[in-house]
Image 1 (cartoon, rainbow, N blue to C red):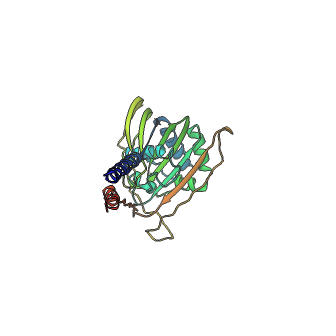
Image 2 (image 1 turned 90 degrees about the horizontal axis):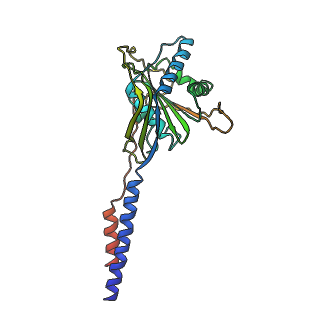
Image 3 (image 1 turned 90 degrees about the vertical axis):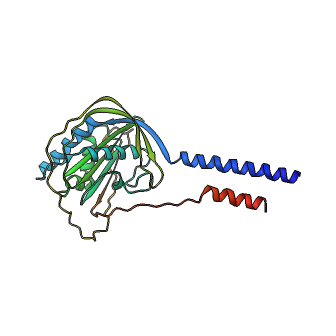
Length: 269
């Protein structure tokens, strides 16, 4: 009898531990970050981008709402993992819509649009994205978190309605840590925010020339010296994708019920 009671108590403790771990693991599917989306800075970066393109004989890029939403989300994600791979293990390109060719620039630590653009233009990989003739649309993200600014640019071909936001929004973002689960804005409180759209559209995109096969992804990563005070760390990364093929990561986990069943079978065997 005592042995049976001991086994039952032991099983209860083990099952409780398993459920505690399971709920803990579920909670770890997201990391919550709260900060501010700065749309005015995003629009200022757009002006600087198109100034650089005009100086190089290129057409202006049109900032679209969908690409900007993706870029803002990516800026928030880089507070968790500063990489072109998203915190959930997926490619950065899964965060936004793109056509024919796509690119992403990210950075953090720069305090103004001028500083981040200077850092990007002084880096070959970032400069190549900004001056890529195959890109016609852009999304720009700026997320303030923990007193530091995180920046992103999402480039694509195709066409879109011009999006000209201004102001800022306080936001709480659930950053996904699990493949197949998307990050999301769960709270977006307007502070001073306004938008305007025009009928201006970009021309149809052309496929970027590549010396590799269409299914090959070309990626460049660079680090730039800080353009801010010595106490501020400023870093940038850039990546470009020529393929129209998207890759998806898959993951499988053993069912918790299988684990419980296995433990109970061993205990009562």
